[in-house]
Length: 266
Image (tube, rainbow, N blue to C red; front, side, top):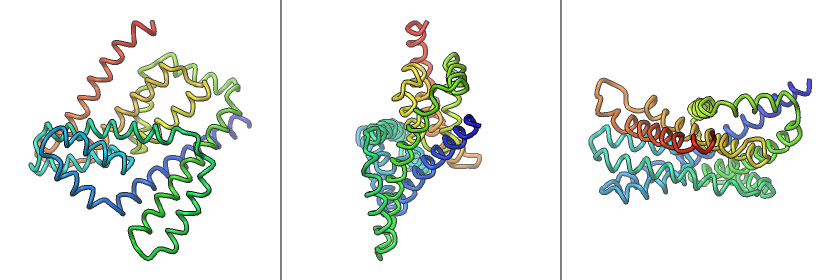
């Protein structure tokens, strides 16, 4: 029974984290989506501006997937060359890391205030943009609360034999860790939520640095799958150049990192 209770609690907190991450993304997209899309289109004249635009838009949207889908739409329509579009995707990768850095601080104490402000904005505001920003505040507040509760559950059950056995089995196979994180990120449409989960496990000493690194690389890979699957459809192969190119770039990068880490972990 304790194992079943722990799994239910972990699953519930992880589901809340994923749902709130999605809530924040949709709230910002509703409030600023057209403006961000227009801004992204104007900055695709050269690769450096495109990189910074990808970074900024992803930091605001909290979703490199959303940035990738917008960039894929521009590339498929012939409005931008492949190189600046790939620069947007590289900037989106950096933007994701900035989000995780901000959320990594222990700020769970402010979650009730964020939820209260969000509810007031959501229920009282007549302006649609402020209404959608209320969703964002509610989502961030519950994200921080979910992380805090998740850490509490992990601490409580970290010494159980079943939990240690699961983590031990995964730690023996870094490639399995990578594929597991990639699959979870693809299903959740959020590398931020998955990396925050990995960060929570690592902060309690439940994951060693190399295992956490492999899971983070898997999250980076998983978020590149969504634009390939959900991007432009049809027989026009040029529409797939950007998402496929971004996926290949990440696969090559992950392969290089594993090749460098293998002598260290051996």
